[in-house]
Length: 436
Image 1: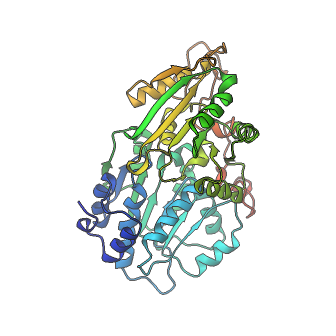
Image 2: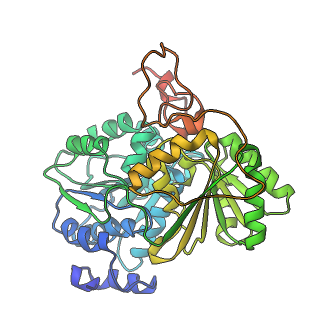
Image 3: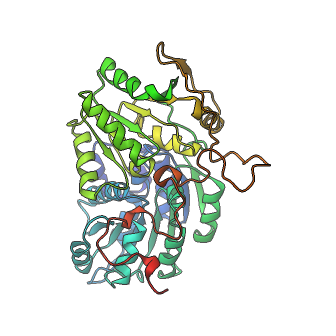
């Protein structure tokens, strides 16, 4: 199968060829024809499978084939959960539309809105955005949703995790009822299907990979280690293996900062990326990692969405996620586009239940080894994963470990607050302090 056989235009085929692609991935082969037909699509494909191009290419073609008004209102909207993912999707839109008369831009929090407003007022056909900043701009009458023809929700599962459902519904309330809706997600959970029922109309479901599967090209291994010796193990792995590019995941922002400092002291160039970092710092850290200026990028789960690095060879779970599906997203950063990758997890005694829950969704056991001299000696009991039910008789007190999806980023459940994409914004007051 070729991209041409999918019905894409010569302009798009030329842009695809310049990016070095010649054969569509499974998700592209399945989704592109359906989207070109105007159908609503619910697509499940894990990161690294080419899903961004799977919706970008056909949407660009549909927009290019229809006449746009002179003032160029927004006709296609892509919503993403994080700034990094928004920037990545926008790069794809911009590159694939090189030979089309299509204008596009991206908006997200963490930067001043003035330049974003100026661009929007000049006219934009396709807009990529995070929900918080987009609503801010709508409140300022800088953008209108009245001419939206296509709505795309990318990484819908993460948007659910981050509490964006209310924002998404509010944005949709300003749109025309007649439009095409596309939902892309790395997993097909019951919550995703419930969200889809409220947005999509007679959708066609597309699965490029089995539910919660991990990339076949990723070699997975776990080391049972003492909690206090994890940093030493990481340093040894990087130095002994002479690894030049390693993405490391921690559960908390503080943990990411602390590990980064220790790596730098050990002579390993590193930077951290998480929700408390300014957008400038996040962009710089990612750019330095991609260019191999820094050998290591330490990230939290939320900040890591949108990190797209070709041929990334190594991912380390410094701490296992308490939400099993997050493991799938993490290791999906390596082994992308058919390349081989390695995912290593460091598991202390507190995390054994996390590992068991991860193995359940993988439907396979992780090969686990013990490194001599670093055997687990900590005696702390295992923490309960987010998917495990609380045992009866425990009273009202929460059990050990995180009991909700947001715990990894903030350590306590936020109350009626918008997620981090507007936390650094200088534009206006938090929506919760406004009169509704």
